[in-house]
Image 1 (spheres, rainbow, N blue to C red):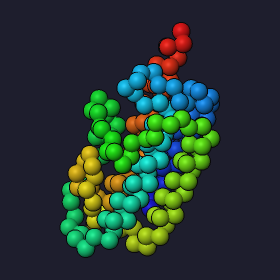
Image 2 (cartoon, rainbow, N blue to C red):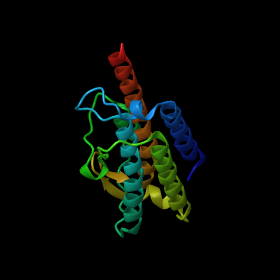
Image 3 (tube, rainbow, N blue to C red):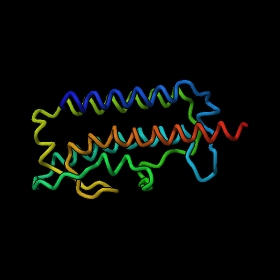
Length: 172
């Protein structure tokens, strides 16, 4: 994996942790609206997506068909928050409350699994040659699945900031 991707994964995760470590468990689990996720649920969703991405990439690596698909501008698609993307059931968060530290531990664990998995791929160039279907974006090159992890996290960091503002406004 190249240094830029590694740095983006690291920097984005640090930004996420800065947003959540200052919260009380009550703030973390509060919903500004019944139809919205809490910050805890957003974070649990991020854990589930990271774990599902590992499985998708692993599955894509095993595929014999390696016909290269076109590259998509995943950054543009995922960072445009005016376009809602419904989470597939497999990555929907639990409704039960979480403790902040519990989620931080889950986030650390899923990132460790990702980095360990990626370190087992001897020839990283294969990631730009094979693809697997993404639930929202269709056929996606495996290296773009990795990029999506931090773009997706960046998207949800903005959502977390919005939830914090909504919660602050409810208290006024």
